[in-house]
Image (cartoon, rainbow, N blue to C red; front, side, top):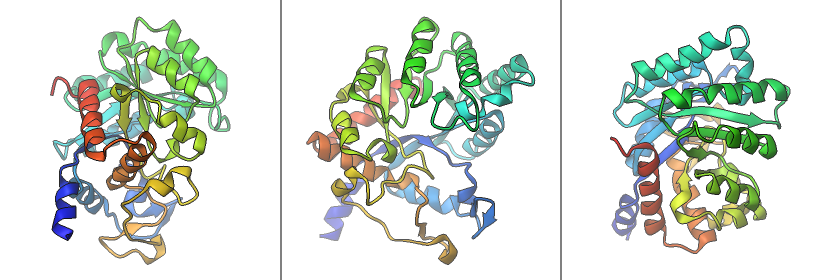
Length: 306
C-alpha cells in the first residue's frame, strides 16, 4: 500500500513560482535570534524528493536579488525574479536611476536565471514601511524595465486594487503579462487581472477564508499557478482550506530543532502539495490532472524558451 501511495505522489511535478529561499529562517535565525544551524540544503532536498522540478526565488530588493542569484547559480533548478517589493520602495529614493540600472544589470549578467520582473506592486496593508505615494511612484517607475527586459511581471497587491489596476492599465503596452502572486482579492479583482492577461498565483494566504476558496474555484484553468511564498503563507488549521489537506508532515518547534525535521510555523516548498490538494478540493478536479495543467501554465509563462 505504501509503495502505491509513493508511486501516486511521484507522478506529480511542481514548479514553485514564489519561494523566499534567502530568508534568514532557512539559516536558523528567527527575528534576529539564532535557533539552529542552516538547513536550507535539507529543505531543498525535501522538495526535490517531493516532485519539485524548478523554483523561482523571489527578489524583493537589490540586495535580495543579489543573494537570490548567488543561490540560484548553485543549482540548475533554481531561478529568480529581479525587482523591488512595494514595502522597500524607499530604497529607490537616494538615486532612482542608479537603483533601476542596477536591477537591470543583474538581469543582463544573469539572463538565463532571471524569469520575471518583480516582486513589484502595491501594499497598503503595510504603509508603516513605505507610504502610498512612494509605492505608486516606484511601482510605475520599475515598469520601465518591461520595455527593455521582455519578461513577465511578478506582481504583489494588498488592499490597493484600484491604484494597482490603474497603474497597470496606463502601462499596458509596456508589459508582457505576468502573474499576480499570492492572490487574495475578490472575484471581480481576479476577473479583471485575467482580462488584462495576467495569471493568478495561489498559496496558503490565498486560501484562508470561504470567500478566498470561492474565488479560487473560479480561476480559469489556463491562468492558474502554484506557489508557497515560503517561509510565509503556510496553511494553518484555522484556514478554510485546511479541511482539504491530505498531506501533513511532522514538524517541531524551532527551539527543539533536530537536523532533518521541519519547523513549526516555517513554510517550505515541499508544502506546495497542500496548495494543490486544496485547489483540487474546491474546484472538484483530479489532483494529477490539475497539477499537470498548472505545470503547463507555468512553463508557458516562465520557461517557454528553456
